Image 1: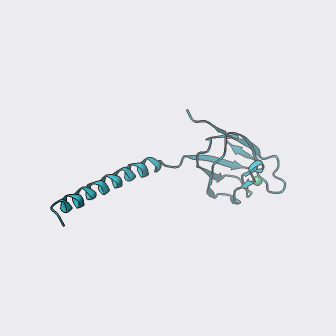
Image 2: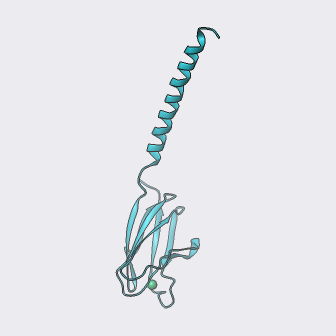
Length: 124
Ligand SMILES: [Cu+2]
């Protein structure tokens, strides 16, 4: 027990506060809101027909069914299919895609003509 000990304790406390402060900054940087894209569904189309997102970026598609039948958004190449959205309902569907163009469709029987694509590209 020398006179140095209180000083060591003190500096360790400063160090901890600094580390916590940096962690807080990092968390803030990651807490940018998840981008949202509104996608209207009608009988039988997606609007927009080309949905543009940023590659590898988690994105929320807000699927708003303005039609009179249930619809979904399916990306066969990625084995992704949203839950069914009933008429009048809005459903938030989260996805992230690698770079590329991905054909989409409503995979419900008889809705094959309801198509479009997701364009997943590098941001600016
Ligand atoms: Cu449909």
